[in-house]
Image 1 (cartoon, rainbow, N blue to C red):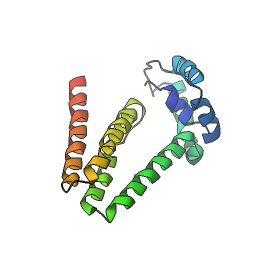
Image 2: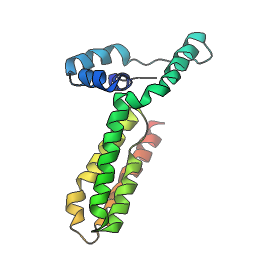
Image 3: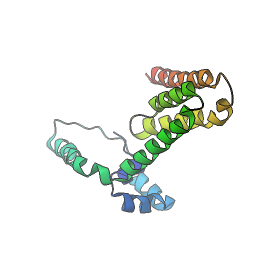
Length: 155
């Protein structure tokens, strides 16, 4: 288990977490403290209690910085779909499919967001093309294949 500072700050209330996230030196100092590999043995009492305490934070999720960031990203994604659905329905469907790239936590989530941003970054050029939806589909497939290849090579 390797929590990053961004994950820890994401668990904080949105205002306080945002305050910390805007200070790179503070974020870096937190990262140096928490970003160490740990072997979590859930059969041990202290690890069980730590995970139990973490699970108890579920009721506060909607007030966290991560939730606010995820909601903003989802709303921007849906706005993007709404802007393209009338002009090119197939392209709008592929924009919906691009969301598959964003998943997980920690490094997986960061890589997925990066891939999503790169794929959607090509949208202005593809929107003007008749075969833009097909090209967007190919970009999504390439990004997903890259993920599968990386996972296979890590073994």
